[in-house]
Image 1 (cartoon, rainbow, N blue to C red):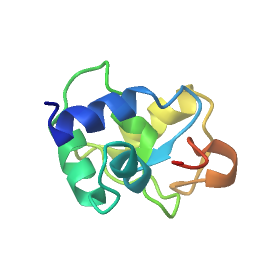
Image 2: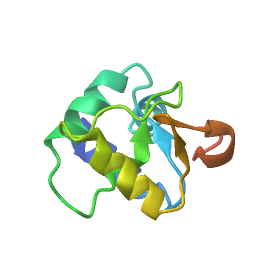
Image 3: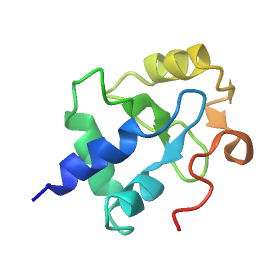
Length: 101
């Protein structure tokens, strides 16, 4: 049986380049919509370049953390054509998936 962390990593790999998802949406895709904080903890432990952790942001559109280097997260997002203005992302334009149902 897959652990919650493994489900988080699997869900995160589905976020396409040029899009972002939220900690809450990833939690829902991993099976527990109330586990946003646990998603952040799981992604904080990940060091695999195959898991695009930089594509997961806060529900208010702010960038959130990235192993202590938020600037690196912003640079990675901008390289994928996600516009970050004053630390925020327009979720109406870049959010994936639009719904979890």
